[in-house]
Image 1 (tube, helix red, strand yellow):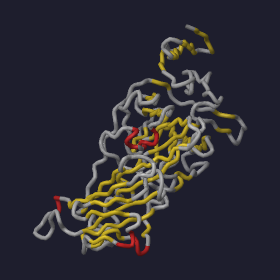
Image 2 (cartoon, helix red, strand yellow; image 1 turned 45 degrees about the horizontal axis):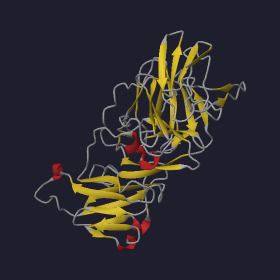
Image 3 (cartoon, helix red, strand yellow; image 1 turned 90 degrees about the horizontal axis):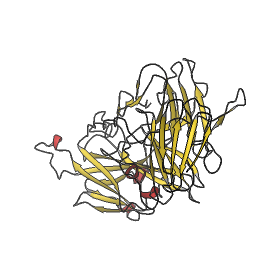
Image 4 (cartoon, one colour; image 1 turned 90 degrees about the vertical axis):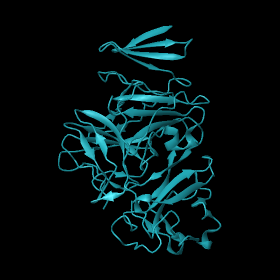
Length: 404
């Protein structure tokens, strides 16, 4: 066993167990970590005096340079606790007459996605039943949260009749109420969405019988860059209850050497999952608006296929709220809507004392935004599937994405 002291942090390396024990001698707090191969992890002592770097010499999660002073800042938020706070409550959806669901077929690169539909029993009437005809649209979004039709191809199914112009990319089964969209896992459209209406309904209606308020399902492709890089990936759509990290991020991350770290905003600690041929834990839950680090040591990028239900918009805001905890806490959050926009545009108000550190996965660096209570000094553009730290003073804040 080898032990050495740096500042107030003691590191004890146990070669036989391939484990590391981190003990802060100021607070007598111990943190435990089992690395995959070498120390990939960055930790910071409670007095911010030391930051452990990964095997490339980079601080965990990156760093940034303060433009005013030229000082290089390494946030190093959090500690490893291995425990979770309370899981967020699943978002309750009010579905319209046509309920759509989406899934990956085989969940491997190049495989298909499957969209099923059913008539909502709450809308049954003398003229509406389980076999009532439907119209199903598919649309692109460009990260804006506003769906754009694909001209003559915008209807996949009309009055329970399949659009033959899509035969090369879509395989329908009208009898069993589903269709297969080919080659969409890790490939195909960067994002695509589907909505369903009863045949004969007015698409312009403002309630759930129209296109605007109908609940969409969709997919978004997000890249986790390789070459031993950290990526902060967010969840922009509503997931099924108790969806684990590999369910959310797709099977693309289930490769030897990949590591996932969810930061628990309640306890203020990381909960890690390490893949050494298989995941050492599978109980980390991710919900809409949450995020996690993905460490990708491979020599190639991983293309993640995130699927789910798009939060409906009520009074200009999505109905998937994210709790941002105050009392001078750091929160790892993501946009709970597949929306492209600035901090102001997506509804993150510049509250006094608030700080945001957006992590740019392509540049592998933080982009900070600070608030004076009136405006952000850097109104960063946030994209679907990206994530950030939000430092909050004062009371907790329920944030709902603004959709204009």
